[in-house]
Image (cartoon, rainbow, N blue to C red; front, top):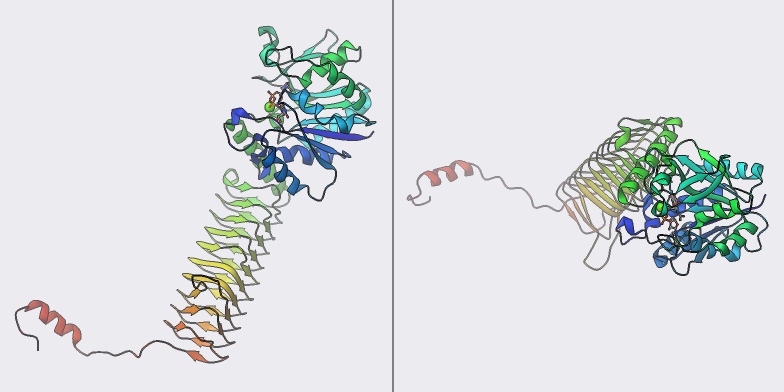
Length: 471
Ligand code: UD1
Ligand code: CA
């Protein structure tokens, strides 16, 4: 059976009360509409036509960037926003001459399980009906379309909440908004849908009544659980969808050997990759394309975005890292800010209140306390003392600092870039380094200390006898 898909993502999403189009609101870091596209691609659709309209100038680039390398994903534009049937019509050029089935997915059902879509495809192939839909039982069915069945239990029609009688509203079998339709039937039936209903919209759901009227009623797959099939129309439903997605992601990683010490407080995004024996404490966010190697421990409150962490690393509380690479056996934190372009090789130690940016630390290098290291190369085994600052910015441009292998930078040093400290060189505490330090040398730039004997005693005497002339 040949398969293509249409994803409906043109609606305004008014009930979200947002400047961001509804289908771009992320769930587990992925725009809602992408979840539908991913499912359709995974089910083997030759083509996935995404129907856009509201906020197209924002939605299309967001989706196109994710599927830039995938010619199967194409975009169509709906005319007036006149309902879900109108949206499908916008993709007509793709199914008009298509000899196969069309899966229709709504772009606001982010947790749709792949098994449900795959089950729908199997049932449709077996049932031999012009269309098959997915329904579910919902004890508080709210505003969902209700499934009306005939005396033999076959789907007769879907009645939208706005049009339903009290009796129909009492029905608890609902339409979740996922269909598989023969392209020829779809192409023909769409022309028979009108907008003579309470909302004056063209309802895609009318397909069910058309199939029944033609004497070939739809088949229905009754999903075992409505929870993952809830559509998102308002913020409370977005929060519920996010919680569901998070729980699924955590379960997936637990099955791969990850320990969560306070599972409900951890946020993961969909593209994050974890490994065996990773331990994650509470309040941790792992976002974007973050990867964490095996045996790594992440203490409370860490926030990592697009960051790669090696094996057996310790991230103590409050590590905030973006676009950073952390090698095996590093120990970082607590309270550390690793900004984009930070690269820490194996066994690096970064201690409390250190900020780094575009900084490469060689194996075993250390910066243990209170430092800013930006636009710098720190050689293997070098020790950066407390309070060291790279002065990388002259008000116009950024400059690089190079610290050689095994160099020792004393506490409270300023390195005025561009500047190089040679391999094995020492910089005395409190030095302002403005010139390169040769390999193996000691740099000192502080005035010689002078001790004035008895000065404190004399100061006290003056304070006690303010009228006496000073001696
Ligand atoms: C729809 C169904 C309802 C079902 C529910 C499940 C219809 C008529 N009703 O109602 O039976 O129980 O979903 O969640 O289909 N869209 C467009 N263009 C439009 C209108 C909508 O692309 O002109 C898109 C939206 O972006 C959204 C999807 O279609 O992704 C569903 O639209 P929405 O308005 O949320 O429909 P519901 O009222 O939830
Ligand atoms: Ca909806």
